[in-house]
Length: 378
Image 1 (cartoon, rainbow, N blue to C red):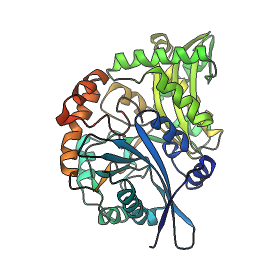
Image 2 (cartoon, one colour):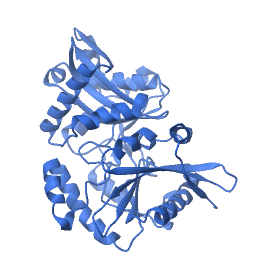
Image 3 (spheres, one colour):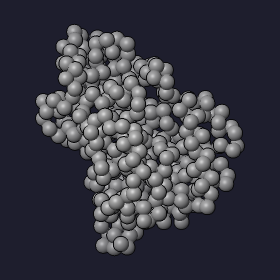
Image 4 (cartoon, helix red, strand yellow):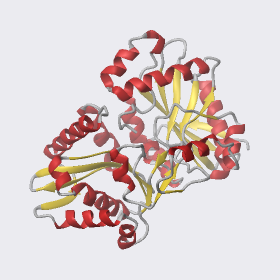
C-alpha cells in the first residue's frame, strides 16, 4: 500500500481525524499538550492512501534521552487505524519517524484488543503469559512482519477491564457481582450523598488531597498538583472529573479522559469515610452512566494487576480484556542497550519519584522518566 505521512498542525483537524476513526482519548490533541509541558514533544501524523483518503493517524510523543540514544518515539493507545491497514500504517509511521527524528525506537501501546480477548474473569498470570508468548497470527503477524516486536518494557498495562456501556443501565448492573450491586445501591441510598462532576477549585483541591492519600495507602507515586491542573485545562471537555460528596466533603473521585467512543480512567481514589459508605461503588456506576449519556460505548478501567485496587475493579464485570501490549520497532543500532537499561528506570519509578530521580543521576541508567510516568499516569 502506497501511503503518505503528513504532519497536522491544527487542533480541530487533528481531533476530528482521531474521533472519526474511533480513536482513544490519549490520542487527542490535548493529551499531547499535557505531555509537552513535561519534557515530551508531540507530533501529530496523518496517514493517507494514494487517493488522499485517511487510513491512519498517530500522535507520536518524543522524549529526549541522554547521549548516545537521542530520543524515544512513543505512541500511547495509538495509532488509529482499521485492522486491515494496521501493519501498513505502522510501517509508514516508522519510516517517517526514522527519517525526521532519528529516535532509538518507535514504541507503540495501541488500543487494539489481543486476538484472544476478551478473557474469562480470573484468568491466571500464567495463562496471560502463554498468550503473550505465543506466535502472532492474522493482522498481528503482519505487524511483526514490518519489524515490530513485543517488548516487556510496558508503560500502559495491557491487561485491563473494558465495560460495554451500550446496554441499558439494568443490564450493565447485572454484570456486576451480587455484593457489588448491593454496595452500589447502598451508596445511592446514603443520607446527604450526591454524585456529579467537579467544577470548583475547592472541590478539585479535595480531590487532589484524596489522590495523594490514596497513593500513600496503595504505595504508588503521584504527580504534583500542577500536572493535574494541566490535564483539566488542556484536555478541556475531554477531561471529566466525577466525584461523590457527603455534604460538602468530597469522598471519592474518578478522573476520566473521554473520546467519542472510549472513557479511560486516569486516576481514582476514595477517603476512609467514602469507603465506609461504599461510595466508590456507586461512583463507578454513576461514571458509567455519565459517559453512556454522551454516546460513549467503552468504559476502560485502565489496567489490572494483582493488588487490592484491581480486585475492586474486577467486581464490575464477568470478564477481563487484554490489549496487544507494547511493541517496539528498532530504529537505531543502539536499541538493544536502550532496552536493557529501561527496566532499571521503571523499577525506580515504581518505588516513587525520589527513587527515580536518584536512578537518573546515574549516567549508566539515565533514560529520563520514559513513556507515561508509571505511577498512574497514562
